[in-house]
Length: 122
Image (cartoon, rainbow, N blue to C red; front, side, top):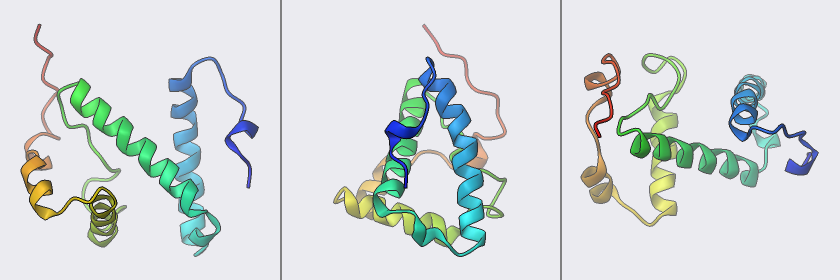
């Protein structure tokens, strides 16, 4: 397994992440299709997941909107079981429960994914 030092970096971290996101997605799909997810270390998955969660929260809070969190229109790519398994473990890792989750929940996706982003006010 290669380390992050082995990956060539450009001068623009955003462009690097944009490019790597496609590669991570395609490689993950291939490993999952082959039943080989176990070849990826727990630490690597935690790095990817932590980075994705932090980027998502920064975009949502910084842009005052809720960007689409997963690919697909419904559950054709990510199943409810996969989503709930992940969310449950994230809550558990942070020592949070359903009560805290309920307090922080935002509107339902159907309420905002079909609307254009709201302009930021001054």
